[in-house]
Amino acid sequence: MGRRNYDHLTRDEVDCDFPGGGPARFWLWVFLGEDSVCFVMDATRSSAVLADHVGLDPDTGQLSDTPGGAARRLVLSSDFYTVYASAGRRADGLVNLYCWAQARRHFVRAGDANPAQLGIWARQWVDRIRDLYTAHDALAAAWHTPATAPSPRAERALAAAYAGWDTAIGVIDTVRQEQMTSPGLQEPAKKARATMDREWDGLTAHRGYPMIGLDNNPAERAIRGPVVTRRNAGGSRTEDAARDAATIFTVTATTTLHGLNLLTYLESYLGACGRTDDTALTGTDLERFLPWAASPDDLEAWKQPPS
Image 1 (cartoon, helix red, strand yellow):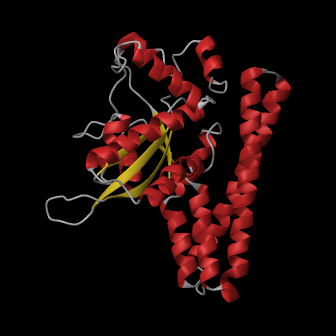
Image 2 (cartoon, one colour; image 1 turned 180 degrees about the vertical axis):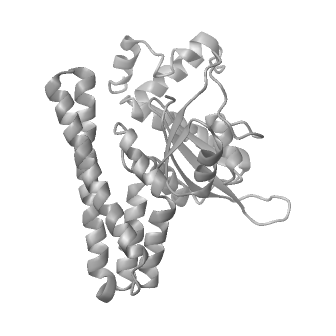
Image 3 (cartoon, helix red, strand yellow; image 1 turned 90 degrees about the vertical axis):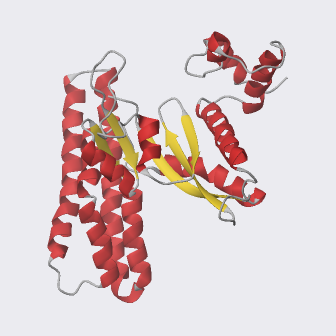
């Protein structure tokens, strides 16, 4: 199974002169993997950005094979943006897991639109989704236990956790179908329900991947820092500056993901550059600073406060 990705994107204003005049709008994408965080600044929100990052053939939409020639598989945890859904429909081996936090948000907004008539209805949906989160937490805990300490007791606990998930999702499914034909359901509620129906397959696919969370909140948290930075700085002044910012965000976020002290890490890297005539590192010199390839001694040193 390929590394999982959590995806999210936001807009970045690039304040510079482009053909046609006016400020240009760029979009900041973030991809979270098990060992890295990658920010991509691009002028579009098209599927080409996703295809380039995860390795989708631009013509067939299929996942590229591994270096050994074996077929790849990829689990993509994302919101409901159509680019992800389209990629999942086209690519064999790509599994979409959709965000339950976003599904819940649709019901909350429907309740806020008409609290008098939809407030209780929305709270009931929030309670059902909360129960699903509880069942998923139990399933994730039980799933990890047999992998580390297999035993008949652990297997029974895992089976019980799957049964708990099935019960929670079954309640949601039953109410979902009952409300399909409900004659008095108001428009905001209908829209929330229609969204759940449309994304149902990706919402229920979480059962097969208990090691992955029910939402893509990690991506939303990762992109929060760059969003605040953009607001404080008023955007970028050139296209190159915008893309450089995405590179900087990538380095800092990946460093944080591995629990390293950013200042110590950068001090070590820039010091190494200084010892090579102030040129960027390449080859094995650069690979030493990739957190997933670094030595245990380097990782421990980079966790310490700066000297």
